[in-house]
Image (cartoon, rainbow, N blue to C red; front, side, top):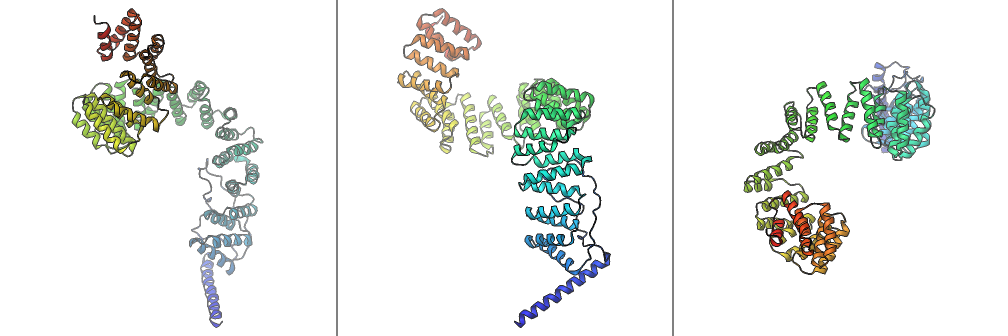
Length: 599
């Protein structure tokens, strides 16, 4: 008992000593009759707490200083203030928020109400924040900031009806800044989960302000987010008609027109730029929309205009270069890419990659390799290494090409499988079929269920005379991916080529055609299957469809053979010769012609 009493006395004495000391300090800087206020380090009197995630459209207007209550600076008030401040610094949110809100209620000082709101928001106590913000609004009715923050917090708390009332009061209380306020309200509503509800709220708010362009613009934005494109376009048109010089209204309407009437959107942007040629963002939008519509020459003109206005900006030179590549204007593309490089475009690896592509287009493989070797990082590193390997292989340096592929730093199994297939392709082109199969099979051991690897390995097995392995892998592929049309086709066609199990082969290729009814190569297989089954008329009909869809020399060889066997030798000879003219040296064509028409 005595110990407890002694402890209480000591704590009481300590409290009075602390408060007395702080009072002396406060009195040295503060008039005795001045109300309690935050210390100099607390910027809440000048700064809004972090409620919005988007920046404000413009700086809010300066507020009239509030009418302050006449409250004497008592030791109890100061102690309560300091207690909440210490609790805040130590993370004791309950004590900090409750103490600051209690102090604001006792003093009815709007600055302390704002401080309580700040603390509540800081600790995520939205109900307390709403209470503090309402107190701030009530004690300083002229504060637009209080109303704006209260509206925002009500919205975040899902109190849509209350938020609507506060937004309406805010607009009415600050009609001279209604344009700015509508944009700020839109910024708050843009992230509201229920966009349909947000749109309804904004339409309610905008209804009394038919002559405010920003109100229509805000409705248009939310209508677009809600999927009501007709309303969005109508409101955007209203905004532009009220403020034809406003770039944001023009930009939005053009954007909305892009889907259904892109040329009208382009015409609007062009007309606007005729009156306001220095509107950089609109010109950039115009250039990009021209690109979307594949109007490359006009787009390049716009980027060149911007490049002339910003001669030190490498991004424009780079954009112009890529458009020139689209236009096959290799001379200008090279000049512009080198300009982007000399002006210090940050992503020089990308520029070097496109310079390599350009050199390939000019058939200058050595120069292309030199550019590809300059790509050190970024998204084009692996493509540059692959192109380097391909070009080296093309010039007989297969060993070096393979070494480059082996040094590629892969990041996932998809890349590993792709590199194995690329290496196999290089080996196949060098007629090293057994080694190509070994590379693919080795990769398949590590990635046994990779769809593309299974297919390529199976096809290579068939190429080197391993029909059992081919069939096993194709059936495994079909089991993993039952809708893989090309697997059914390859498996069935293999049987047809070997002239074995024809009924089973026909089921496989017909299944493939069911999965991909417009694939000419599968039509060819089905037609060839009819031929193997003795159904010549059906075969010719199907092969004609295939040849019409793809004048492939192998399809021509098949169609000609069936026509010849059916007795239509003149037409068969005509098809073979026309196809051979387009594909000189084609082995399947030469083989069938030598077999049936060795003239």
